[in-house]
Length: 214
Image (cartoon, rainbow, N blue to C red):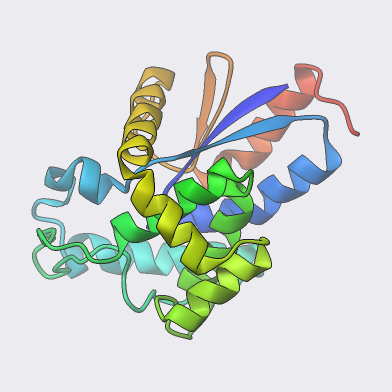
């Protein structure tokens, strides 16, 4: 059974769903296609207009911590945030030194068959650790953990930049065609499940439609 999994490196909810998705892959006969998308802040920065710490980010942070506690996962505010944004005004900075770099590394890792594994390893650093996730030694550890080399992956990401951007944009088109713009998004056939809190519903749907254990 085939499933499309839409993922963003800025989404804590994408981080929260990964252990359950990895367990699904390990235990069931299911083919999960990793589809990386740029964060909504890049795809649609106007979404954050008039959203600030009081009206949006504070309440989100409370929910992130509640979900983390429920799933017994560590959670810390990422330092730095993968998206440079003024949380007092919601304005997205025109300068984004982190997100394109890590998205392109992640897509290059996907070409090596390590998209989900790399996403989990890096998300664990971004949201699950207090250490500076963007430090080179931290990124090297992420690559090492999935059998890749940071220098080599950077070189591939630079050389294949046009293909990577095209593939990510194609994923975004497919995401909208599936019926939603958000992440994490799981899609099987014409049915989609948006949000980490819909994972049990997704699992029940897959069982009813014939998903078998390995």
